[in-house]
Length: 392
Image 1: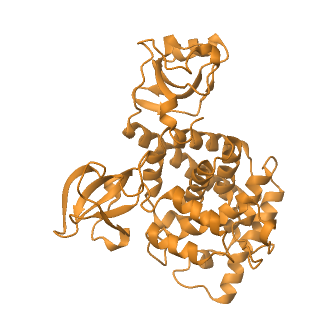
Image 2: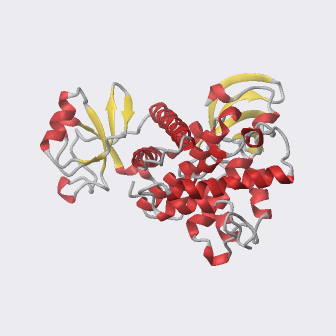
């Protein structure tokens, strides 16, 4: 939304029969479920009639993106256009749907690319639009859903998470919405070249030999060939695909770019790709906590990564990102559940387990702004004796 720092403030729930031409519909509510693929500005009466005939009773309208003539930019005084909060459960359901669609699309395109078919950009543009709308409607919901990882689906999930992190980072840097969209597309496609890497190397449960590493690096050569065959990819998307293994000192690959040869979005992709790889469970390693990953990112400055951008990224993600696990001062473990409009040390935490007593506890939301408790440390999922997945 227009107000990136507080997107929900721009949204109001409107009955369909109160819609007017010029209003920007961000989400459609149907039987308690949200759909955002059809988001856009209403330009003709037939669109409203179609919604009514489809049984849709309410939609979510973005006041900032609606026309001035609609009278929504001042706070609406009409009682029938009441401001309410979108349910977190609804948002997480929608985020899960988008992530599932993203996995299906990336899986399909990888299969087709392996068979020699050129990438069709349009489905990725549609998916990127849906991702942006969901993130801007409730970024915390998307963060929690994307935090769930499956080591057997790493390649798919890594591509989707890189896209999400690039959009999140780009919003923090106040980049234009169209640039955010191109960043998302680039993130979804950034590892497309790995489809041509030998599976024995790609999924090896151990350290690669020098020869195997050189073979792995070929995925960027393959990516260049694939990208050249694709029509309609923006330069930003191409750069994200082809620059995430470059280094500021020129020792990266595939082109050995150096210093100013790496544009902002190229430098961002290097940071995001490494961070997500470090915080994911792989066939040969457990997931690292975000705090530990931040230390590694900082150790790679200034020769590999841009120092200022790494600090910007840490401020953007937060020491305890939404979706990560933390231990509170009373020994309970929980998921960082909500951080919007809060400082990094006082999120809402969804507690479900006690490390001290080694047992599940009553699931409770603890607001650290209102509690005497505090966060003791970040927790790696691998260090727990239980699976946190059911509590997301």
